[in-house]
Image 1 (cartoon, helix red, strand yellow):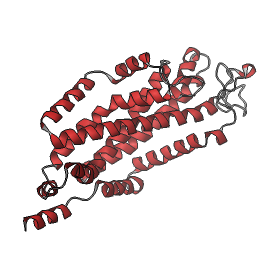
Image 2 (cartoon, one colour):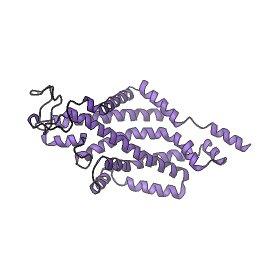
Image 3 (cartoon, helix red, strand yellow):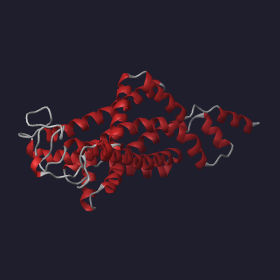
Length: 301
């Protein structure tokens, strides 16, 4: 009899986090103006990044000393050959922006995946098991939080060879603590719910409870923090590339383009202005999507 009642309690568990996430996407696309702008802006940027080899009028590393520091097409001396002008080596700015979008999106999303896997795993285990395990994990989290992200990244990148893979791993490791703290808090609340107690009472394995019952119900929180983390990760990646410790030539990054243009701000402003605009638009689009998710998630509690 008790087993039957416990089974019924499990059947009455809250709507899956995946189902809620789908509802939030519908809200994002059809009811939120800022969310709609963010989604379609990101869609355009993603398509540009994917189709960069087809859309780009030149090769990203094609050097042409004759056409160096050409202004944008609407300024005196500008031509349709170089719509946004060229840099100090005669490389086309528009082409380099297209290829830079590939790097920023790839690094931003990949590092968030790494951070999410680590952080969600730690948060689920610490929150569900509690006690000594929770204390150990949370002290590790506190240690990471005491070190600024950019300082930690600078130290690691100065030890290992800078590159895309290294950068993705470093940025993932610097951001996992945010996921761990949030997911742990969610789990501490969820494990007191009836459907979790019911699953425990009928002898469901702890690993199965974590994966089948807890994980789907924390996915909403994961999506919210992931969208906002992508924005901060893109800024951190461009900052490190600007300092020369991120993406290395011949790969193109927006931070690298900014670094190339810093010595020409007074005479050739477009070298630094256009990558700055690209970074701003991308980050704002991600923030719009994240804020929309956060608003709807809060109202849905």
